[in-house]
Image (cartoon, rainbow, N blue to C red; front, side, top):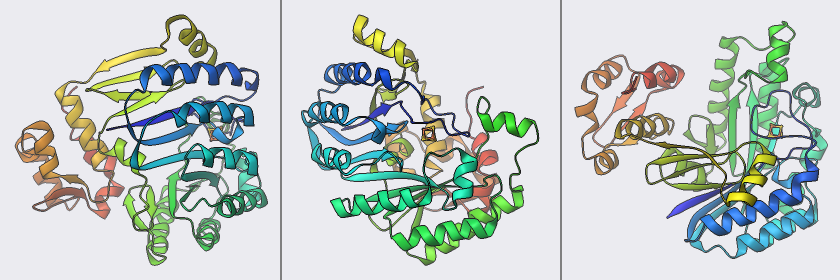
Length: 373
Ligand code: SF4
């Protein structure tokens, strides 16, 4: 069974570090966009789905009437019995009415973007909310009955000290969310942060400090009952994100909306990312695919390894054999042995995974698994 990803490309303001396919000041297109999205879903989603994830952008920034019409379309989609249905939201855009509409369409998991606890850091990042608004959004979601909540956090931020990072984690853990996503800031080309950094105006932590932030977070969260199940993701037992596991296990998903990606029958599809072009393409041709890439067997093997090694439990040897008809050790005998001897990979009868040192050097280890040049 496939999963379904739905992209909402609207944000109230563009954060200064963000290179996602999201746009500010395009609210006038919301109605037409939702109409097109509903058409695309009706044409592409005819089977039962395992999970749904509405991401963005800021899905909670949609107006109530748009959430309502999207909800009517989603209610028609058949869902697996134990389906997970996540919606992403940002404080400052949540209202009781919107959350109730999401609940009514079947959403059972919320993912809230906080990033940092301190208002000074939120300002540096260009976030639209302050800390009080985050707390209010979180409490509102709990009060309405959402019992599976993720909070997104970032470390390695400009002006962020290790103490500020630990304070963020302590305050967030006090709220008792089921899941935490913790990513280090990457300064991407094309963002405001990139320009500021080029001009030497961003004071970011050193690599050593960043590593310390990562390690301290891991120790602290594990002491509080959160299990690291992927390099950047922690959860309480049984609250791992099922939708993201679809990506990490190279399973199939349908992506609807501008810039959405799909992976179906070994093919990768990417939709047009410009909102206007997406709307026009759906109107004119009833599809908005920009590019289709037919994965070779080598591509599938590489992707399976890159994604699989992100999971703390690593790659299942049996699953690899079932998918590709070969033992992974037959394909990479020398590479696996070398990294095993260097203490970067741990290999047992069931799986291959990165060691703690291996996680720190994951880019180097993973690049050795590239088959195609
Ligand atoms: S809210 Fe999220 S998607 Fe929107 S601009 Fe900020 S980081 Fe990007």
